[in-house]
Structures are given as C-alpha cells and as structure tokens.
Image (cartoon, one colour):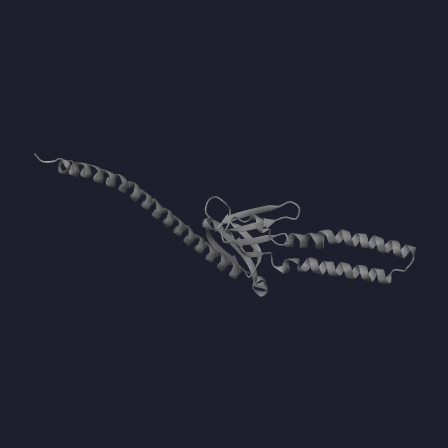
Length: 209
C-alpha cells in the first residue's frame, strides 16, 4: 500500500516513504504462526467424526477472532502508517479506517534529533524528534529504520529548501529593482528630449532677416 502521490504539490518530489521498522510486527507475526500451528495440531488430534468436526469449526472461529486484534490489526496499523519526506515537507499519515495526519513544512523545521536505545542500535532503528517554529508541538516519529540516516536527509532538504527560498527572494528583489529603475528612467528621458528638441530647433529653423 504505497503512499498516494496525487496529494503532492506541483514540483514536489518524494524522497523517502517510510513505514515503522518491521520489528514492530514481529510479535504479531509470531502470534499468527502460533495460532495457525494450534489449528493444525487441533485438526490433527481431533477425531474425524461429527463431534470432532464441530469442535474444529468452533476452534477455527475462536482462532479467527483472536487473530483480528492480535495479528491483523497490528499489521494493518503498521502498513497504513507512513512517514513521508518530500522536497517541501515531512508528512505523517496514520489510520486503518479513520485517518489522521500532520504536515511539517521544511521552512518551519528548526531542529531534527534522533534517539536510540540499545535494542534500536542492534536493529538499526530509532526515534526522530522534529522541532518546528510556532506553537505546534514537536513531532515524534517512533521506530524509524535507519533513523540517523533519515535525520541527515531531512537536514539536507531543509538546507536546500532554505537556499531555494533565498534564491527566489533575491530574484524577486532584482526584478523589482529593475522595474523601479525602468519607471524612474522613463520620465527623465521624455522630459529631457522634448524641451531640448523644441528649444533647439525653433531658432535654427527661422530664416534670418
């Protein structure tokens, strides 16, 4: 389930689309394996008669009910959680049925730091804390794979975004100065050419006595 790129602005490009580390679904996967193994063993040891078949169906129903909260929901939660880093912003999208999200534009990011426990260092994961200007609370992204690398990517994009904004501002200022200079030079040229031309041509054009 990839991130829908139709939500991107014109010229915006996805640099990284990240799910939480796969270790977050390791326990649900182990539980799912145990449930399947239990169903196979139960089907093997129960007699192949009406009572045994009824017991097997009841057991299958129980296992399915157990698998929903302990296997399916954690997997879908992991799959539908997106940490998307683009050339304009950092987007967070969560939710299976209901959705929640937050966008942090690169121009508002003031600091990006990562934290790793011993286990995080072993599995090469960590948490990212994104601080932004204004009254918005910090955004904490948990279980980010290669968190130190992702931190460097965000810092690089923030620097590039700042440089791009400065270049746009300088170009606008240059165009404004050029427009102001052209408007200031226009009246001077007209005022200087008209009177001089009229004053100089008149006496020369009149024949002498």
